[in-house]
Amino acid sequence: MTDDRFIELLTKKLYGDIENKEIEEFDNYLAINENYNDLHQLFIEYWAQRLEEYPNTDAILQRMREQMNTTHNTVSKKKEKRFSSSIFKIFKSIAA
Image 1 (cartoon, rainbow, N blue to C red):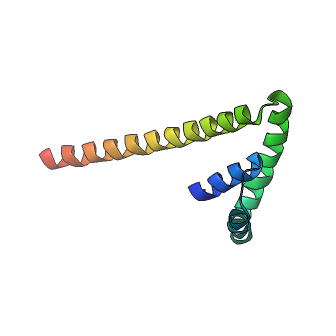
Image 2: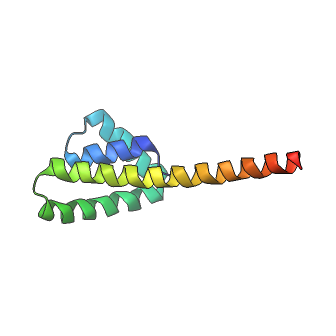
């Protein structure tokens, strides 16, 4: 699972709106988790591709945020559905 703060820092870094203190924090994330390095590289490549398609960086940032939110919402809904289904089964077995 990716930390929301890491995503926030990654977005700021790609957007060029990151402070020195935040750069240190971002580098710490990269140092402690190899998956974050992979994710960082993936987003750099994605950012470069999209920059050609969308010269306006605000549009790229917005699109990335929308995609991240869509993914997060999809995962959350699946978890809620599984939880609701489990609760229903428990209540059904108690009532029987």
